[in-house]
Length: 462
Image (tube, rainbow, N blue to C red; front, side):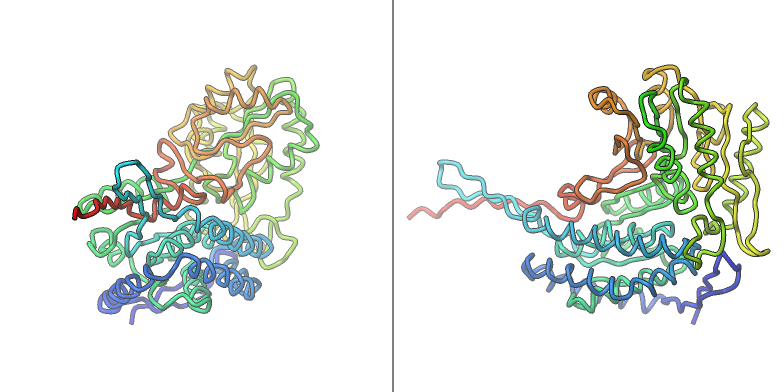
């Protein structure tokens, strides 16, 4: 039996050994999912809603132990990991609360005696290839609406956080969802690759890098399998000259450095009105310098280790590139450890940057930020849109009307006003450009989980 070794990035020691599924086991699990899904599709939506509500209760019952394992698998500070468990249940609960309306049949009434119905029927067996940075939240974005819509879901989680898939499966089964409807798959890369062309899979949802996303999309298209992609971002924040810095600086800094910057929708570049630029930078550096870097199992820790040691090279290269091209390093810029252990990187702030530098152009996915001054809204808008990505963007101002005028011009799936690094389950989660395709959450997210079907019944003539 092949085993997966999961390393704790804070200690760089093996934390868990996971038995992998072989080819025969995988085939049986897929067939089990197909059989279970046929029965699950007949269960009324109201009963599925009840199961998802109970799933939330079961997950919360083990909040502390699940959070501890998240920290041990990918280095997230345990306080932040507990928050992720809470937000996971909040998203699932919201999606369940709108399921009856979102999945209802639509009867079209015309005066010709013909019965017309638009139905949203389950696709079948779906595959979620989930990422490690928010291992519960990324998975639940797909799992909750998939289960509510009557599908079966296979979870192939990142090799960094495989135990999260197991916890999700367990909580669904304990909530009354039949075995086979949610299945955690422990697979190596070769086995996972085979699923991309397996005709028994009718939808694939992938969160990860742009190159990997393109590969998944191209490979699955051979069998016309539907694919939803979330591929990251280079999310901008624009701070206008009318803001209260006491309020804005801590929130924007948190948006950039929470979860060690390892978030698809983290703030990765900041543009500040020139009149406020100097004071903003000073306060921003002061705020970031106050963050506690350390053992993720300590509750006061804000910055834990990076989940992948290889990320350090990217952050070092972006720092060197910026400085070589005229950027100025105000804070951090180097790899570090905690008590001699772990894959840590100092929180890093760069100024005198521009879009010729990788730190303002390429995804960082770590605790690093570049800050630029801008002269007006027009310049800010041009720079915000000067990116191959378009997941989220944030505008910080007291001028609501101006923000409403700017927002339609911003090329992003979500535009925030006076908020950042947040996923609202009442709104659709989507990206443009290289940030991906498809939709999750909200009533629109259900459309990714269903196959529309039309009923056109003409009464028999007597």
